[in-house]
Image 1 (cartoon, one colour):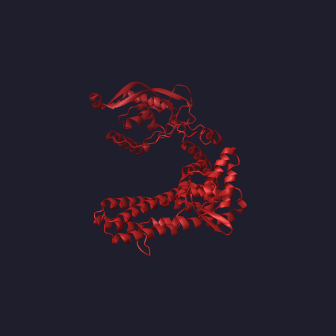
Image 2 (cartoon, one colour):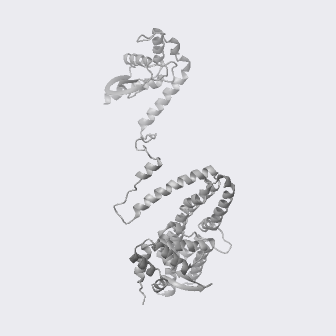
Image 3 (cartoon, rainbow, N blue to C red):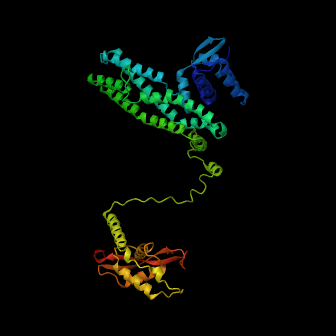
Amino acid sequence: MSKHFSTLDTTRLIFEHPKILFRMIERMDRDDARFVRENDLAFDVLDYARNLNKTEQVRIRTAFSTDNLFRSGLVIDIVKARGERRLVFQDALLNLMRACNASLYQELTDARLRGHLVTLRDAHNRLTVSSFNQADPDFTELRDDLSERVSQLIGLLRQNVFRMQTISAELADMSGDASRAPEQFSNFRQNLFEQIVTLYERHIKPTLVFLNPDTRLADGANLFATLEGMGHLLEQNDQTEVADELFRSSISLNALHKPIKTVATEVDHFLRKTRRGMVQYNAMEHFFGQLRQLKDQTETLNLARKWLDGRQFARTTGFVVGLKGQHRPRHYGFGESSSYYQLLFSELSLRLADLKRRNEVPVLQALASGSHGQWVDVERIRKLYQWLETIDLRPTRDLVRELHGRLDGFIEGYRFPDLLAAINHVSHSVPETFQLITTNRFATLESPVAGDEHQGELFVYRKRRLEMHTEVQND
């Protein structure tokens, strides 16, 4: 008598070596079949177990034998056709394997979606003639069946959404030849277009129509109208708990429309890409795939591996080398206090006043002395002082920088000696409403004009505050 495993032990071995069933499901999807040939499964098992030790090879061959799979209930039927044996696996097992591998999720077709809609319409028709009595087994069975079917539909649609959100990797694989064979890009683009159009027409578009609450169908009510009708019937018959459950399910289904719409937009943009755009797209997807592999390594049962180890990735790609050494860009945000806006409006008023006095601005460059050193032309200083007498001042925490901002870029020929002269003049002729306070804090300024003898130098100065007399008294 040959050795057999229990259903639990067989399932445990299948999930310890999932690649065998992954290959089998890929072949089923590729052939659009609901069965797997016994010879193909036996060949996959032998090929997978080739590099394992003998004990493990025996265990795997025993677990994946047709007799053991059938006795454990994982294979529900064996069909003999065209001189071969075909194995039909449990849908529960296949769905669980698909849940473990996102690439094996099946896109929902129009036929499958309509099948679910017809089932819900049938439940609605049965509900109209139901007794709504908890003691009636027909009603309780219908209620439980309705909840199960709605939950199953939400699960399938969520899997489908997740599957479509990973379509970027498939698009990159489909366009991989574009970067290697530019001379055949036109033929390649035609084949790619046909594949993506099939994907859009057979999977994405039907799902969009199915999840659109405004869809009008010739053969009856759409999904949301059907759910709403059943909810009204349940509420009218005091079945509020089930009605609330249907309402929450309707909200969940409505929320799935947006990510599907995003995928449809991405596919449309991809079809418009040029060859250069596809090459760039493939490069980004290639490195994104490497990061996904690093992330997958953190999702194992090893609790110590919870951080993504990207050191090797950073060294080989050069994308993020030196990134930590760079300061983050500072964002500019408007303040919320009234003093902030008073300061802002005051600055705007002063700038506008300066612009109105454009004709009064002295051309200091024409008055510059030809000699060098510390001596400054008296006429130049006199013109600068005359202009300073006409400008308006405001309270500021740094008078030196304030004067620098007013002079730099506004007076032609402005140099640092002009700033020193301006500071000296304002310090000895402070307006009556202000008070000048010299602090012990220091700041720096860089030479403002190219060609200045002080160009490239940093000047250290002591900060001076210009405050109103009322503010000083209040302090």
